[in-house]
Image (cartoon, rainbow, N blue to C red):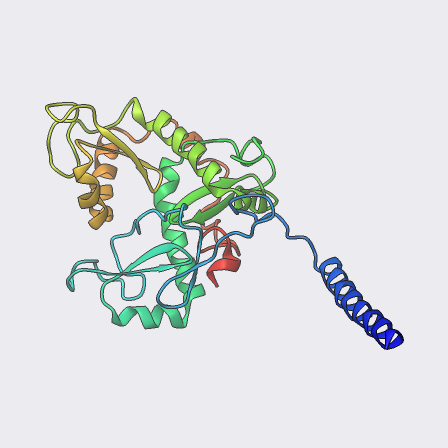
Length: 281
């Protein structure tokens, strides 16, 4: 009987030891998690969000600028001409359509429509771009050939070369904050309006100090926070009025120098559509 009990103990130990060994081997075979490119910390993958259509979105903290164009990318009709625009996001990036029927056409040939949208955004935002240096390398734009005009979440961001794009995608938020600072510095001193774009109230009047926001590389000053929501309902309308005010003033100081080094039509690069294309598609 003692021999049988000893045999049972040995068999149990062998089984437990085998399970433990398999667990150790499995742990050793599993690679350690890498830092996410935009993740919350070391060893954590960046969160992935999906909208109702199943499109992957960027981390929630990187909010898209409003769609800056005043026409539907599919029909070419004026937004608002058929009622409230249909608004949808792709990879966290906002697009507005004249009607719901245009969404399906857009999604059937997204690459072509992204190129069309990006081209217009580059052309309209280039006169307001505040920098002559690359935000990543610090090198002079144009020193390594034509600058790379990249559209990220409806904003033009310029780089000295394609090699700077992956570095930008690792932490777009930090780079965009630097771009915001440059926009405010360049456009703030000579801001062309003394009244709020939305309410028409005097800036700095009874409402106190103006509220400053950067939209689509434009500094926008509003009389109060209450006007932000109204501005974002029809951003293209207000940005057009701001553009007209700048034109009457002779343009943004220094913008001509910032726009140098780019040939007409350049800027349609493979990474169009916003930030990290792998997430969007």
